[in-house]
Each structure stands twice: as C-alpha cells, then as structure tokens.
Length: 135
Image (cartoon, rainbow, N blue to C red; front, side):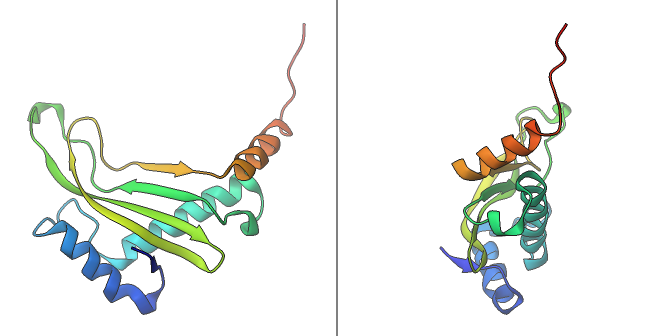
C-alpha cells in the first residue's frame, strides 16, 4: 500500500481504514484528518530533532490508535488501528494499516524510526546544546 497523504486521497484513505477496522470505530483511526495529523505532528517532531524540513525524507512512524485498557478490565481487548507512514521527497505516504488488539500494555503510542543520517544529525544537535561538567 502506498497512498499519498493529501486531501485528494482522503476518500481512498478512509476507505482503506474502514476495510481494516470493520465495525470498530470508537478507538480506531477512521478519518483522513487523524492520519494527516499524525504526519504533521511527526514531521514537526523530526524537524525539531534534525533542524531542517529537507532532512525529514526517509523517516517513518508507526502509530497505534486508542489508549491502554484500564487494569480493572483484565483480559479485555480493545480494537484499534495501527498505521505506518513514511516521508518521501514528494510528501508523506500511508504504507500499511493493520487492526490491533490493545490491552493494558498499549495503545495511543507513536514509534518513530529515523535513518542513520537523521539519527546522527539529531545526536549532533543534542550534543551541541550541553557540555559535560568535570570535577
């Protein structure tokens, strides 16, 4: 799956989400706006790490909808949506959608994956902001 995240493809994205989610909607990603929001939030986060929008290409984010199930519901599973987005030179793309069963351990989390160059740049930017105190 490779769907560019843009308003022109909003219906295609929502149809793909609906086909994976089935009847689940309360704790699942169901709208184009939610997916666009993940891309925008992730891009801003990466730009903060690497310092320039042009360095965002190649990054990926895996996002899970919902929140963790309260401990009092031991053994209960909540239907959620997992999406993978990738930044390319022409914009963000939705590359995978899966249905996820969320328990007490998960939900509502984003996992960011950077390229080696992005990680090196982020590390260098962080290291330039502090010094180690020696006694």
